Length: 357
Image 1 (cartoon, rainbow, N blue to C red):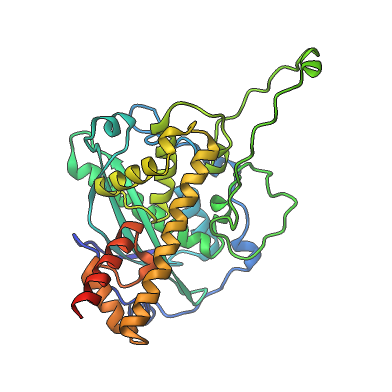
Image 2 (cartoon, rainbow, N blue to C red):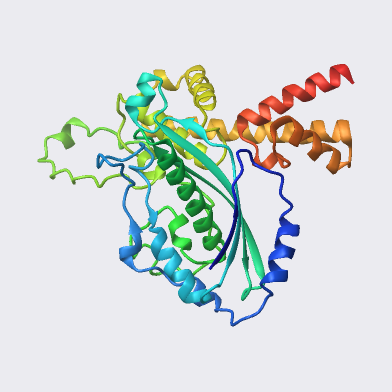
C-alpha cells in the first residue's frame, strides 16, 4: 500500500476526480483483479472486535460498549492478500480537531476529556480500476499528552475511513451489518456490496405480563441476557433510569453517521432538543432511544429538503454558485456532508439572504 497524506488544520476543498486522475497517472490501472467471491469472503472469527476500551479497561463511550466490528489489522491483512502488495493508494485530508466528551464523568462535569477529528479519504484500487471515497471520524481520551491524543484520534479517523472504503468493495463487509456472530449469515448468499443495514431493527415492545392463572405455574429460569453488541440490541434493552447512558448511545450513533456534530456546542444543542422532545422525562427504554434517533434523522432529512428548495429558488440550476455559497457559509461544498446543525445554520443564512437580496 502506498499512502499520500495531507493534514491541515481545516478541511480543505478537494476535487475528487482531479485527485484520482493524478493517482492514476502515477499508479496506472492494471494487475490481476480478484473475483467478487474472493472479495466477499468472510474474515476469520478471531477478527471480530470486542467493545473498545480505554486505558482503565472500561469502554470509552456507551456506544463503544454496544458496538462491534472487525479488527483493523485483519481487514488490512485481507486487503493485501486479496488485492496484492501495493493494491491501493490513499489520499487523506484531515479536518479540524475538536474537544469531545468521552467518559460519562466528563459529560457530568461539563469538561471535555478527549480530542475528536474527521478525515476525507480517497482510495484508488489499480487492479479493480475503481476508486472509493470515505469519511471517517475518530476520538481519543486525553491523558495529559495532547500530541499523543491527537495522533491517536487521527489514526482512528483514518482507520475508520479506510475500513469503510474496503467494505464498499467487499472486504470486511460483514463488519457493517447488525449481527457479527460467526454463523449469522451462513445460509445467506452475498447480496451486493455492503454498507450500513438497509433497515435497522425496530423497537420490540416487552411481552405482556402473565395472567394470574399463568402466574401460578412455576416459571422457567430466566435466561442470562448477552451484552448488547449493536444499537438495535441496545434499543431492545430493558428500561432504566440512566438517562445519560441512553442519551450517549443515541448521540454517538448519530455523530458517527454525521448527523450531529461531536463538538461541545453540537452535543449541547442535541441535549436541549432531546429535553424539548421529552426524552429525559421518558423511561429511558430502548423504545425511547429509537424514537429520539428517528426524530433527529427525520429533522435532518427535512432540513435537506428545505435547503434544496431554497437553492432552486435563489440559484436555479447554477450548482457552482450554490456550492460556492455553501462552502463560504459552513466550509463544505455538499449539503449531504453537512450535520443537522450546519443545515439549520445554512437555512438561517438563506433567510437573511432572501431578506437582503
